[in-house]
Length: 62
Image (cartoon, rainbow, N blue to C red; front, side, top):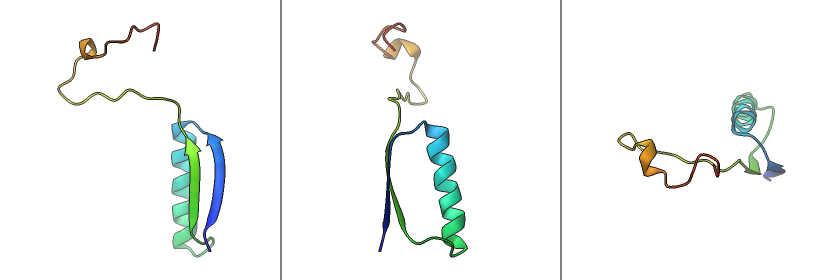
């Protein structure tokens, strides 16, 4: 059986920390399989060669 955690909107560092804790607990046999259902704040990701000029939205909008 898989445990499902519906967390709503969670900031990225908090979600990552929770995932890391659950991985350790799973390795130690403290919890079974867990499915996290969550959402992060919107993020704009730029590739290595991208420039800020590639973002067409204004800083105020972002």
